[in-house]
Image (cartoon, rainbow, N blue to C red; front, side, top):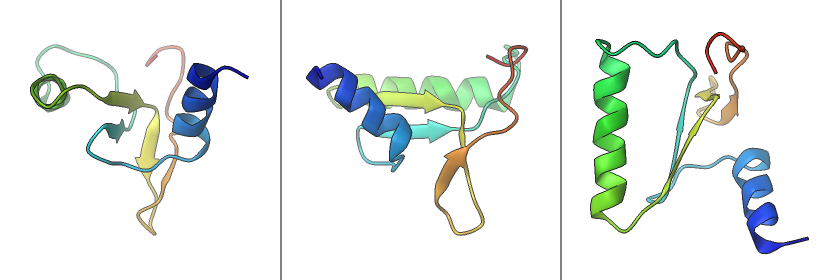
Length: 77
C-alpha cells in the first residue's frame, strides 16, 4: 500500500484533530453563511502555517470524539 493511500485511510478511519487536520460537519454550501467564513479562515490558517487538511463529513459526538456525519448526502457533498 502506498504511503498516500495509508495516510488517507488514517484520516478517515482514525479521525483526530491536530494543527494539520481539521474535521467539519457537512452543510449545504451557500456563500452567505457563517460556515463559509469559518472555512476560509481555516484554509488561510493552514496556508500561513505550512499546510494541512480539512476533512468535511465528520462531526463531534457527545464524548467529543469525531464520528461520520450522517447528514452528508449527495445534495450536500
